[in-house]
Length: 396
Ligand code: PLP
Image 1 (cartoon, rainbow, N blue to C red):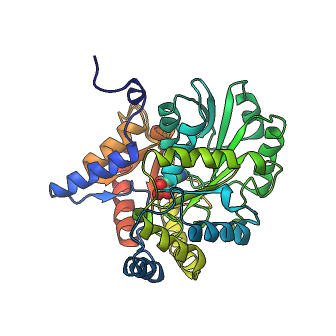
Image 2 (image 1 turned 45 degrees about the vertical axis):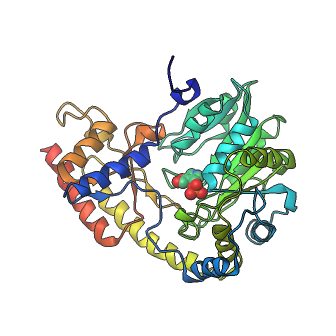
Image 3 (image 1 turned 90 degrees about the vertical axis):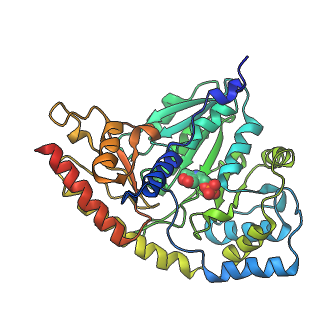
């Protein structure tokens, strides 16, 4: 009899975490590795947020809190949704978890029955399909092409829906492509979904505040008639450079919110009391950090996109959000270069030039790779020059 459960056998460890780990190991072995695999801002958490956490410790906020978040944090989340998304929620429509990741995991565990389908547009964030599988559901992956800006179209959505569809996941701006959906693109999807009353919509808005070039952010609950079956997930990790604090949240139908809390009550209980106090300050405090940081990210994005498009065989779209680009390496996969696919491309790049990126197939679309530019300009300059040398050596 196997020690490992059948449900665990259905999933694999996160490939993005694996790349980061591999880069760490090579660095420890003395190699000058540049890691462009991590999905976290390199900026430090703003001072006012850190101070709020210190104050919370000194005040004695060091005990268990309500399982699904303190009333103070829930109120700050309600204010955030009203202020930034013009969405009104009551306190029993809000849940807080240890990161958006936990909120999503709890959501699928709480709602999926065996065989229920979840529509996941690809390229997707690596954890969606595995979370669905772990919960007994069936990921229904819909490939979205570069020509489509890596975004789901209404037609593809309509064709993907079956009697078993339970959820559809939307993620804008997206990990791994940085693509953001326009108001019209979201409304076109909503027009399809409105006809299927039982389908639930999960909007992962974690990159809401990482956007450029006046890209206007919209979330589906705000601009459609689908609010009563939409779970809008967000968090402080990417917006406020707080990945390590582990606070994510969601707003939506009361029965789903209650079910998420029930799972949390029998697993992790409340997220850290201190992190929750810090998140209150992040959401209620001054918001200037978001703009300053976006300016720095934009500069890096422009540099990376331009550098990549100067390399023969590489083609890169300019994304309007998040801190990733998703260039194509298809022009370098042939007999002459002896590279079979995107996985061999990223492996060789790491081996030859010590640059760690993640293969597109890990995100459900082969022939591409993901670069996270959430690192210093100095690192990016070095990395781009190494990628260029590597690709040129292949072309010779
Ligand atoms: N959703 C997407 C698309 C992400 O990229 C991530 C993190 O990488 C998360 C959710 C979860 O973030 P956290 O658990 O730090 O809130």
